[in-house]
Amino acid sequence: MENLPSKTPSEDRHRDRCYGCFRPKEACFCSKIPSIDNRTDILILQHVRERFHPFNTARIVRRALNHSRLIVEQTERLLRMSLPIGPRAGVLYPGPEARILSEVPASERPDQLVIVDGTWHHAKTLIRDVPALHNLPRFGIAPAAPGRYRIRREPTATSLSTLEATVEALRELEPETEGLDELLGAFDAMIEGQLAHPRSQFIPRSDRRRNRTSCGVPRVLVQQLEHVVVAYGESPYGGPGTKPTGSAPVYWVAERLGTGEAFARTIQPEIALNDKFLGHLELSVQDFSGALSLEEFRREWADFLNPTDTVAVYSQGTARLLAGAGADHAKCLVLKSVPLRFCGTLEDVLAKEGLTSPSPRHPGRAGKRLANAIALARHLSKLGAARRPDDAGDGRP
Image 1 (cartoon, rainbow, N blue to C red):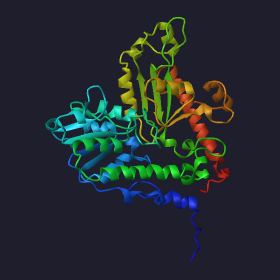
Image 2: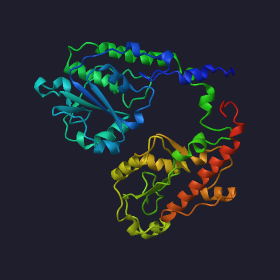
Image 3: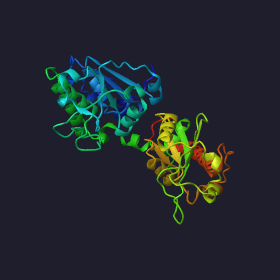
Image 4: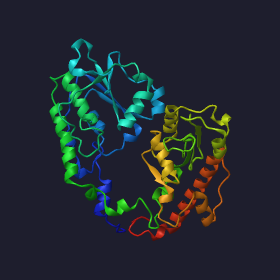
């Protein structure tokens, strides 16, 4: 029989995982999660990008509560789904119109609580875009103490994780229910376990280095090029005597390299675009006749992107346009930051590298620059693939 090489400790840690709490088995805390016979039905709508986060507390809630459901879907699909929302449902979401549960008479309290799970930005997106949530009464809680979620950053000191918020709500709605303290105890065990085992002990140094190849090319360009969306945006006109501002784009174009899917939208500018500036953009007034509002642009851009996508832009300035529009993506790659010999404008880099851009698929200067950025991304992919065999410490063929 052939002797197979034994696994390294790092490989064992990487593969030996509990799929109940989604933690490494040596850090599993499933035995501490109680079974709770709650009366109020809990429906958790989870943003798809939160699904595989290692400290996802919605998974713990679903595992603990006997009357609970967890739905994870793309926002676009949630719009078309018939969600299991009952006649006396309410949504747990803070805001000026939310009624504090402790102040609501028993006869007006909900039989079902809908809870949105994700970052605050993702939660706002679900509340805004899912019609089934629009007419539900909103309820809030008044936590007596700051949140205990010390391993994830929260927007304020009083912000709570999904698990903490659910426990606080159930304590108000059904204080007689047993097991809620034990559920918080499991939550604390997860946090204490992580703090006792820094990330460096769970993820080997060689894994952390794998974000880039030995020649400095990001691995996503070499191994996952089909999930790269190259994008370019035009800054708005800043007014007479001023430079264009970086608040939000007025024209945004993108292409997914794996499928060739294209995205091109004009966005309503805050200041009317004069003929000179339109000439600079190589666009016309007609191109802006169907321009989207900023909110519409955010929604359509979010719908275009997949959770596995990485948005690649040439410069940090383009990335700031997305941030200014409130549409930045979790994974963003700045091509200009690749530590090779790139300097100057995108056109300068292509000329120095002897690269030819594909024919632009979109009108205007942005269409040409997007084609240039695509050419650079593909060039970097080839450079990284050519040098990958020299990638010391990878441990893979």
